[in-house]
Image (cartoon, rainbow, N blue to C red; front, side, top):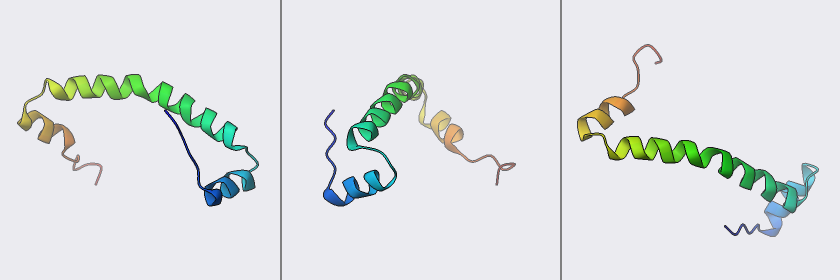
Length: 64
């Protein structure tokens, strides 16, 4: 994966006290950690019917 930042983004990163390399490292570590979770959810969704997916994505009334 290649990450490219504009000059404005680079300035924003550096204003936070980080380098672009540090920002990329954090992003790559995040992707590495989240990818197995995403793959597991994707596999679950592939094996679900449309009705099950709609029920799964429907917001819980208690949370609203």
